[in-house]
Figure 1 (cartoon, rainbow, N blue to C red):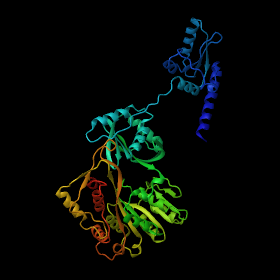
Figure 2: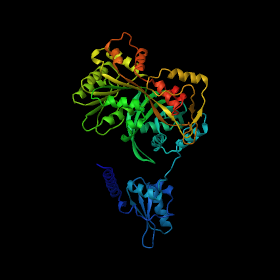
Figure 3: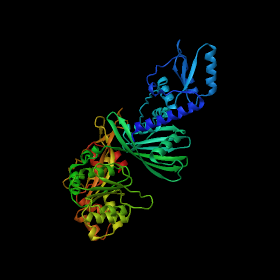
Length: 540
């Protein structure tokens, strides 16, 4: 049933109840639907305040042939009706009352007192120590209408390109922070009474309880309109009880299926060729590793999009589903009650998929099931928590054990980070000091053969310069990737041919095979002027 039909039915019920009430009280019933949008408004009879307070509206002013007519509601005090009759009769005017519905009263009052459209200032991110901007944004947020404050926060976060909104209860206020380009910035301090409004909105939209005594997870969607048009925003909501109330973090997923493409990730040609070659193979496992917020999901979904053709069946197991994608069977997995991805994965493999994405490998059972699937003719994509590709490979061996059968299963491991991109128009070149030059040379001293080596005897670096558009000198983020292609030399660790199996030894073998580490890829990006060394050290 569409919204218009529901509204029509509600209005019909309201009119029927009013008609019945009028008959009981012996008052004439007036159905305003035929004229409420065209009724000529009468000035000077009652003030707007008097209409709201008395819950009645003037319908017609008196003429020689007709009396003053008022529409009263079931909430109009009888004492007011009696007083108005006396006053009008005393001055020789005729007056009549008809009973109208509350819905009719609202429509007429919207014409007598049209709602004012308030346009609020856009939120600005305060620079370090900029208390004036902070105070101004806090004041703006406190002035936003109660019903609009939650939507306003989300709209503004989307406009700023924020990935997260942090709502944190403090003793006397609520601190609002937003993560923009990977860095957390304080946006405002809200009055404490806004807590109830925000938690109320979260409760109804994301199914979060304000009275819960433990952490909660929820999900909601919101349509956001900006200069580029309307798009759907997916929000993952996490709350946790603290000393002063529930703290919430809202993760924003700006869903646009057309943006989930490997071409848009600006992956260097050599690394892109490795990804294309491996994901085009009908079997094997690809692992994405990195901390929360490092863009793992975006890269995985971009791979899925590249593989999403009519001749392949793609199935994902996710907790929760972050992006809804056309042509892919996506299955939500609830892992809160001790369930794991492994049970669902075993069921899904019976559906004969070509490609399976497992949201995250967290335990031995899921790891072994996914590995077996990748050996028996499926391409398996998944995420894994580790700091680097070598650490991930070492940890995976800990989970599944050394086993010759598994040695050819894992084909590619990608460790990923996102670093802020310098604004080309404003960035500033500078001469680094000797200590920095020495450190850069040490990091890049063992670059593999075939890499374009920069001139390390004489090089410049870049620093950010703030502007009105980019208050920190950065705009957007770039992907830094460490890619370990699992070659014959790496497979030895999984087969059990190598006595020592730990992160450092695996990394040495991978570098000998041509792998660039995260730090090396990051420093090379800084030398190209795409980002800064400070940013590389902050993130990696």
